[in-house]
Amino acid sequence: MESFEKSWYVLHTYSGYENRVKANIESRAQSMGMGDFIFRVVVPEETEVEVKNGKEKEIVHKTFPGYVLVEMMMTDESWYVVRNTPGVTGFVGSHGAGSKPAPLLQEEINSILRSLGMSTRSVDLEVQVGDTVKIIEGAFAGLEGHVTEVDTEKEKLKVNINMFGRETSTELDFEQVDNID
Image (cartoon, rainbow, N blue to C red):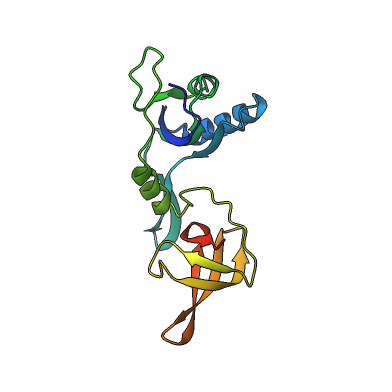
C-alpha cells in the first residue's frame, strides 16, 4: 500500500536512543535523496523544573520513551530507509512480514504536537502586514482581521479584529488563519 500522502507514523526504538535515531533518519533522508518523502522527525519531550538542594534545574523527560514520530510519505523506498535506520526496531502498527504500518489519526498527531508547542501541519501562508485574513480556528473563528505583524520564525502573526466597534489585537498561529482570495 503505497501512499503519496504525508502522514505521521510511530517508530519503536531502543530506549535512550531516540535522539540518535532522529539524527540518523534526518541524515539518511538527506544523503539518500529522500527529502521529498521524509519530512519531519520528532522526539516528544517535555521540560520540568526540579528543585534539588535549593537549586532549580531543568530536566527534559521523554514523553514517549522508546518512540519517535516521523512525518513521511509511505513508499517502498522511504519505508526501507526509515525501517533500516540504526536503532529503529520497527514501526508501530505494522504486523511484520514486510507489511506497511497504519498512520496516526490526524486528531492523535494534532494533540501530541500541540502539547509539544509545535505546529500541527506545515502551513504555506503568504501574508504581509496590511493583508486581510480569515480566522478559521480558535476563539475568533469566523472573523476577519488585518495583519499588523508577521513572525515567520515562530509561525505567528498579530491580527487586529473589529469587535463591538473597537479594534482588538490578537496573536494567532499561521494554522489558525487563511488567506482571503
